[in-house]
Amino acid sequence: MTDKNAGVLAGFSAYTRPLGEQAVTLTKSGIFFSAELYRQLGCPEYVQLLHDSAGHRFALMRCAGDNHDGAVKLGQSKGSFKQRRIVTTTFMRFIQKQTGEPEDKTARYRLPGEYLPKECAYIFDVRAKSLNECRIMAGAKNK
Image 1 (cartoon, rainbow, N blue to C red):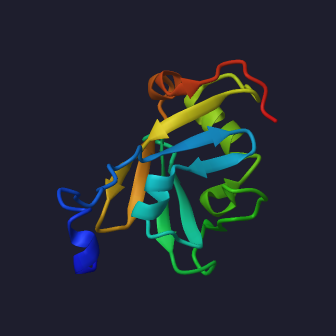
Image 2 (image 1 turned 60 degrees about the vertical axis):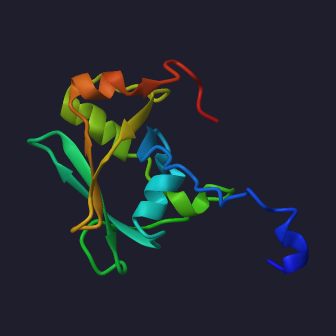
């Protein structure tokens, strides 16, 4: 800032963006990351998709490339969300089956995650009760 603008901008301070929601949206066509979750993971090109069937949880962990089991390349879709999306048409069916939920192709779930900084990963609880609490747009048609 120059001395000329110092008087005009006196009293201003830098805007600090608050943290947004750290969650994923699970749909029939994929897993969409919130912008904040994506940033928290370091804007990865690849993530490892892990599941704990006994605990009814899944995890997303940043990984360096496709040389890990379960590694998925982000950005396999078109549009503004492409870098924050995993394209998978089977994962929601897998989750619904694991939790005993009836298969519903129109269901959408917004799942908050628990961040594990040491592992650079998020864990998501998908027990039937948690899944029902996270259901959004029940009965809405996906495009």
